[in-house]
Image: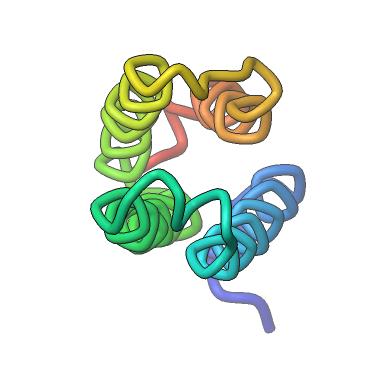
Length: 112
């Protein structure tokens, strides 16, 4: 028997959250890469903390909470601003997160 929260969550949102969590895993691996180390120690710490925050946001969306949507929105603004200020901004880098936000916005009324 499925729980009511699992039944209420759309499959596409579940898939996107899992992909986002996989992206967090890749982000944590990227922390030890030479290009990240060349940017400075602060950038490795920033990547680690942003991965943890992204996991929290995705968990909120997984649980179908409105705070997950709003937290992810703020996360995207801050994260993309940091990349832009560093000169590392690339539109493809935010594709998955914006897709998650867009799909979540479609189902916003179903969030608790």
